[in-house]
Length: 317
Image (cartoon, rainbow, N blue to C red; front, top):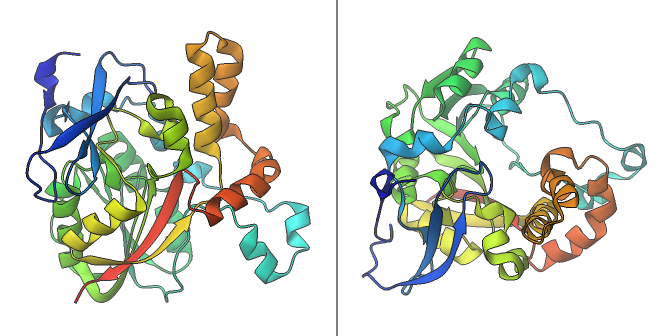
């Protein structure tokens, strides 16, 4: 990939230039050419991809069959059946064995915005619970799928989205903040659209977890170059505060999808291609293997060492 498609950008927290290279890695997810660099700011510790695809060229790195687009069509959005053994557990025990990645605070239905809504599955789920929902989706094809399902969706980047007619009580984004070119500006825009007591719920990869230390350039959640930022619990707090939000809670997801798929990349580099393919496909095809791995995932989550986190935030006064 030519350097003309890439740009360099400073730390979004306004730090003076003092970057240290952390690693270099290829596009493992889509197999597009190029090697991309991750740097760490010497002042705040925020890691980012630099140089990175420019906003004008970003679509090149999102093929039409990009997984989140295909897997979130409303016609495919069916309830996940709970294992029979879980159905016999009490409510508080079920909370321990909860594998959901999109935990939400207890809120009465109101107006909800989902950034990066893909083809509309989560919009559909929340609308069924009484929420008035809207979405923002970068992919025009995925946005059109959600629109055809009956939902109001802006096809384009958050930066180009128009001001809504009413404020939101809940704003969510599942694995999307790391894709924004300027997360601070994006969060400020969302804050301006939020009701004073609104909740912001985001999931992001956790680059502060043991997975990243072990696998580095083979870490599944690295996903260069579409992941422009690589957050830890500490740096996500700083980004939220700069964007007008206050971090309330970090939930370390009780899943090991990233770890298993990262092992797949390791096997791939060592030539064990059949095993590698099975491991890399684990996040999409795990099924009940999630239950088998749950004890280890639960222990690691207690220490903040799983590779994905869901954060809750509120508007800063």
